[in-house]
Length: 363
Image 1 (cartoon, helix red, strand yellow):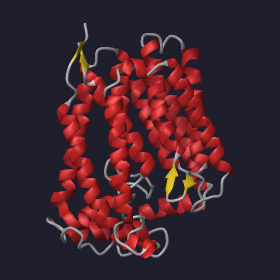
Image 2 (spheres, rainbow, N blue to C red; image 1 turned 60 degrees about the vertical axis):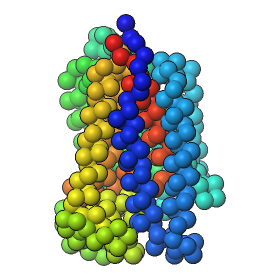
Image 3 (cartoon, rainbow, N blue to C red; image 1 turned 30 degrees about the vertical axis):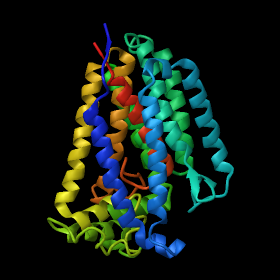
């Protein structure tokens, strides 16, 4: 029988440390850009603190509500329909940097793909908890779920945002793997995914350029290779201990979006190998606590949702760090709990609240 405990204090502490680390680095990495855009060096930092504060309140509220009451059919239906509606609606707005990803409200913005991401984690968790023993014996029940995932992923690709779509697919695949889905489905899906990725790359000049720059960034140092080259310069120049907090130079309009997608590069330059490793250790600790919570969850719903949320955090961190270190082609994925970004921060902390709530219950 499940019993209620205090929430995972270590996980809560890890998240607070990461948020504090991130706030310091957002102030440092955004100061130059903020001065250029707003005439002061702290606009992005202050805005980030406001978003973190609001998101922390939401996290605490969610962490105190029983996840079994929160994750139900009605809530999931509303979340999925809202996600689908917003993903369609955003395609009819004016593009921002040639993409259709955001609703703009003055200085603030809302990215519906972030809502879709957590909605799918809860939806898949709820579905698998109801059909845990039958997913390999009732393929017709699984197909509508994959259809919903593909529709949402397809809308995100149209924005275009292939990185987020691939992140969602990876999370979903992991959740089904944990639930015991047969290997034959992964083989068929993997072949199809490779074909789709090939089509998306060869039929898009900028995707082709990014892949070629990944292979040899110096072949186009002022074009598609500019971002990975500047990122390597930033991390490489940091050495063991870094240039010192706020003393980095790559944020002076060399690194694109230094406070969001390439914040890890700024960390590497200013805090060096030591600072970078501290952050990676924190993500490793987050992975450990998330898997521990999943293992001790009192039911399949708690187990699968905890796995999905944990993988969501770690997958995004892996992609962000891999892009900054040129292990993957350039793709804009923020670093969870660290990067500046309102929508991502809000839904990451809501997801963390659900994970903390699951930790309150054990068998």
